[in-house]
Image: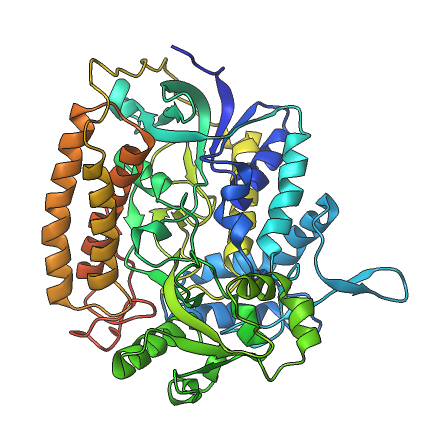
Length: 533
């Protein structure tokens, strides 16, 4: 079997969480292996448009940022986590700038750069730094360049993790369940190999591809969440899938997001007939928190029967649009829409999961020697609805937290290590009817969009659960009878996440934040996390 060398640290995922973490761990001189599912340029980070929220304006404050985050989170945020993340922001943004990330701003008289701050939905102040409307791309560029030039970081692209290897599976240890490595598929070659590590970190992003309409790239199939659950991790609040209110609606456009910053600079949401409508739903109008805006658009579409609403920036100075949103302007022009003269057709789409693998304040999961960082994790920061541009910030903070904890000799880590058995493929034949997998993928995504979408009910959830149980059985039969390939890996993970999401939604008997139930339109008096073991 072709097996890569053992490593001290195995980082699964190469977005802002994975690369930030790898760079910090590498400072110890220990070996770090980073696995990217596709190319390094295919992460959710690369496609992030808006920016990073942090307190840099003297008129702003940590308390204001904390308050905005907690209010957006609808009572479900963990305040200690919120305060940690908010207070760490300026320091970590400075690290990014020192690393070469270039954000929009002006030089002052002393030669220092003053970063331009924009405002997004739910924020009480301008506090979002950005690089035009391609902030994630610029952050990823800087991190990738740094990681590639670091000697003890080994980057492997086109690698899909099949499952984690734990002591519960290979050598039961009564001191607890420990992660000792992973089985990985080399996608170009199609073979599966084992890689052993002292520490393993899931930084795999989210699972937006669970839904028919999403802003996420095709790689966002929730692999880290699924393999973490199968390894024994707890999950929490998976019912809290945030739907971004404004994705471009065009028959040729694929998951193109219209950044919330467009509304931050004055964009107005209008009905199909051109009437503004958000003032009827929230005092902040078009700048209301995402859950409220997405639900309002969903209701307007149901009332009118229209396929989309409009986001209008035609009243803004064209130079402002060209300066702040050149990528959005360019992409819309490719589809024949001049946003300086025409309104942008938009619809909500699955965007970001506020739930995930349960971690503590250091990013540790319930499995020893295994961490989860970024969208794959549920840290308690986002609660029932993520505040805009807090996601990249969270990834940086918990990469920092995890690296500090692991590299601190005072913790006297008691590592468990065993040799990992080779992957047994047996005599399974190649898949004979790939249509089974493609049909299951399509059915899962339509099922989730129709029954577990922006507005839910007990009846819809019950229908979804009944169907997903059957789909999972069909996929399991396929998994055990044929040789694994990339498609079956992803649909197997998606079906598991769908099942967990439906169970989580059925367990929350209230409406809170993103999760809206027709049967329970009000929030409970006590906020609680929905945790599945």
